[in-house]
Image 1 (cartoon, rainbow over the protein chains, first blue to last red):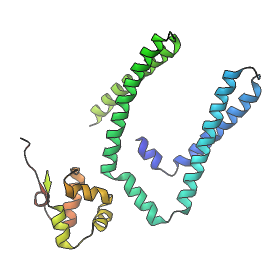
Image 2 (cartoon, rainbow over the protein chains, first blue to last red; image 1 turned 90 degrees about the vertical axis):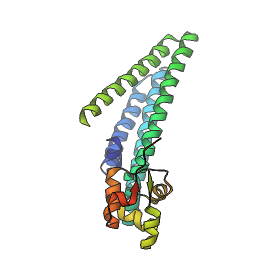
Image 3 (cartoon, each protein chain N blue to C red; image 1 turned 180 degrees about the vertical axis):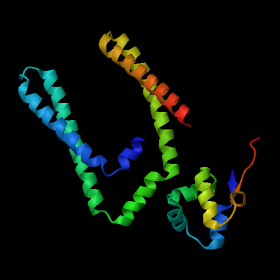
Length: 145
Length: 66
């Protein structure tokens, strides 16, 4: 589902708009916060950076669509829709998912050991969200197929 | 699952790139199919069979796993 959205040409202008919103939000908020609010300024810096990255990626992709010959674009489309590539992607995502779960567990134990309570709760929360997302997705696709 | 894809393709004098383009898959997919490293979906198997005007069973040979 997500892959199809990313493949769509309409996705990139939307990404640019999201990037602009994040960029403006980051800059305006950064100006409004006092200089000694370091955490908030850093957070707004992250929003600004993410917005800039979205804009840059969107523009690069749009230029790519404009300048690349139709034949090459078709070949790229074939590569994206290729069933073997999709299967490889699914396997890679599944492995990454298992590693992320292990990482969350390791992080939770490490944070508890270091007495960082809040980050530990975040790690455990993220792990729970991941398991929940898996269960919902499994149930949804089980009903669909 | 074994297949006779490479043999049939060569008999017909078709390049991997041409077959890939006709079936709308990548050349690597054709190569993997021929090497037996990848088993196609039923849709791709039908597309291949229709492309060569053959039956699926004439191209793909199913063997029970021991």
